[in-house]
Length: 410
Image 1: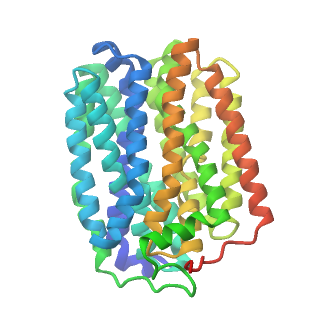
Image 2 (image 1 turned 30 degrees about the vertical axis):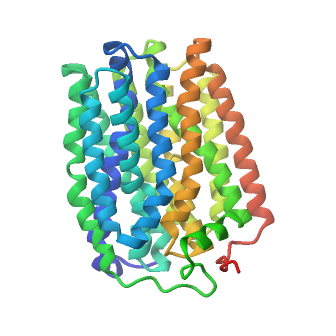
């Protein structure tokens, strides 16, 4: 493993990418805290709010391959700066919302576009290009870990401002945080000055975007990983969107929601570091399957009984450890299969599947709740699909050898 001395020349790039990711994801993961007061104030339903968050995730997912391809053509800095500016604009419109249109455009479309330019696929691609191969898996885990710290700041800030001054003040507090994404993106953009990565023999670095996508979509290991990633997104967005509402229905103190999201963020630091390290020693696809299985077991154990403050914090801590550890594993797998040049674009294709799952988790949870008056069927479906995805991913990892760079299709 590379030492801190080896990484010192690129530390500003890594810190910039981490801060940008941390602020963007911390704010986005805390949107569920505004749902109860926002929906009451401007007469929206739970499924209305869930639809806006689902559109956000679809915009993020479908634009992720586009932003990844543009980063190769234009450089990472202009993409990240543009995304940070879109995030600020989206929060401003969201905070002024008087109805569904502003919530959809600001909280849904604009912030979804912003995340495609600033979140995990772009940040991890920046980190992967900046460090040597021997340090890559751990550094990707470290970026993911520090990227989760924003929720430790964003969730309590939003909860305090919303409780004292209303949900609009909470969103304006988010806006103040995201202003700092601009200098972070500028610093992370120094990666554009580094020498282009040297392609491994047989990888697709020399391919056109179309040929690179074709190679990815013909790779069985990538397709299985991408399909399992759908379920990953479904589970995570169901939790972040609907856990605050579920706890409110069960009569829990509103501060428990912020505490649970904070616990998820804190333990995600440890989980991301662990899985980043583990990905350098064991099968990344096998570890991914293990995460999906473990998440499903934790989800079932929590929802099978009425929540308490203690059980909620234990659930949040366990889920947090398993939260974004998938990030360095997916990113590392894409690099192993396809090389560095088109990593952000190909990882964006996998992430598109994740975001379609996010759409289903957020909107489906809201629709099932509105129809049935409870989240029982939603969490049961999440558990069943998570176990299935995890078992298939592990089985496929055991049946196939470690991925080798995919040659360019003739």
